[in-house]
Length: 359
Length: 253
Image (cartoon, rainbow over the protein chains, first blue to last red):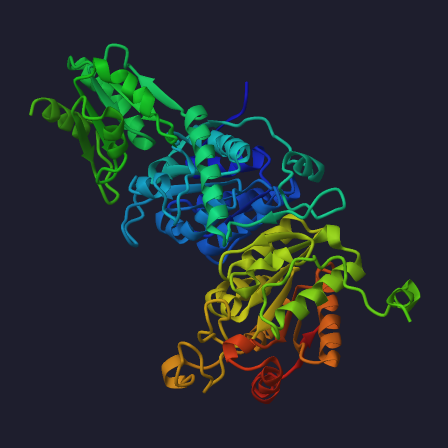
């Protein structure tokens, strides 16, 4: 029986990093995710696995440290919350442009501006539609439990290196602060220099006579070259969309109404599904686990059996736009959300649902 | 005498280091970047560290440094090179990691990154080219632009009331506990070039001794930005830059 330990979602990120063989973490304190770096500092992985942990002077610096580490083929990551991620937007665009693998965790809090330290899901657009400049995409994973937080670090690195692309774990203050039992996986050793050189021929491992010099850059002054870079990136994103969609469904077999919710909201909506079923409504839930690529086809497959859909988010309605794009007007898509750090209760959602189908 | 009789190994007095590629440099004639690139390439060759050197190029005229020095390179966002270097070195302590940055990149937008990398005493080399102007964007005021100096954004000369004062970032960095070697050099005549090369070599050697950050400023010319011929630019630099940015070691421990 594997070890199960009660911990916060944020702590699970730290343990996930150490145990998946991460080489480096660079971060800056910000609520509600500071436990990530605190746990790493307490665990002192530099004495065991050799993992580097460093507190940077700003989020700007953290993300650029990630860029520097990723350039050498190392598994590097950072974590922050909303406004800190805004500061990282430049770096994220550079990472995507230079095709560097990394994991970036956003434990979302309410905004805009300095906002609140309470949970929110208002950074969906920023994560999924861009945030930084240029035509780029990040793979976005949405954890709904402390276990997901642990698992998605290793999974995130696998995807990041498979596609040479930044991966974002888009979490929120609920998942980050909530304590749950987490099953810790096997300790995976960090890659050796030889393994890095072999698996990442693009990485800066030192120019030797056996190869040309490696250059990590997102610069192409010639627009013909820059367009080709963009075409290559778009082809990669198409591959990601084809191969990497993950979503979960709950009681959708005979559902006539569907909740679509991710992260902490999917946990609450699961309870609402049971509550609505008891009240006689045939309701199911679809939880996108990857927000990019979005489970568009999975939603479309359910459309013929549905009378309505309700997207539930801790935002003014961001993911709901992708639901509407998927549904193409074939069934009504309703929305229920709370903003600025407020968490809806199952009763709030159930009431909104009943109202939406009787309007 | 036929030329072929002269081109013989025993007559060789100078050869371009193979670490410098054959790419045609995009720098303006008279620019200091080319000279400093050559010095870095020579140091890398002489130390035998081509396979251990990682360079980090800035945003600015030297953004394409990776086209000219035949080692592995990272191209950084504007001003962030010391952050990249920090992680690169910490994750690869066997590598010689250096940044190459201009005054706009290092002393304006990248002030926080350079200050904190130096304060942490990262075992890296920072080469800082100070020509008191933004070259690539067309000659605007830099943090190091001298009072009275005319640039595209100080058309009537830099005025302290309007624009603040020229920043002596190197003196600031010398105050930090984390720096082990802080020096200001130039490359305007053969003697200065030889001294600058020695400083660069020392900085590279320091980076393997866990002594802290080595910072080499090189006061240079931007004759296009200054709108002077190369010869006049050198003279202007000696008369105006050196009194405000005096050459020499500020710290060596």
